Image (cartoon, rainbow, N blue to C red; front, top):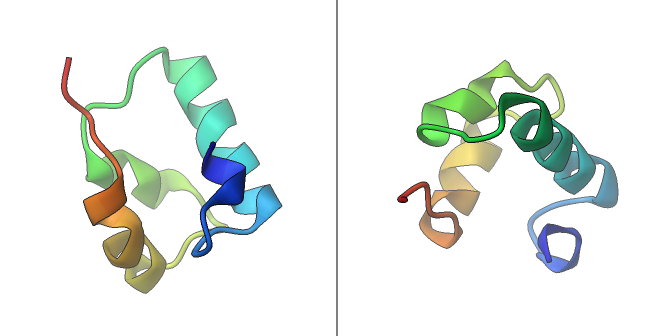
Length: 54
């Protein structure tokens, strides 16, 4: 569903998916900082739409 989010391009959504797949689970929004395809502003913009709970 990330690829349908209006704030993300397909390549950004794919990068988030791949990071999650390789890590098995992301602990928080700060984990997305490892991705070169997302700026800090973009991460802050999508933060309310993501959840990292169990």
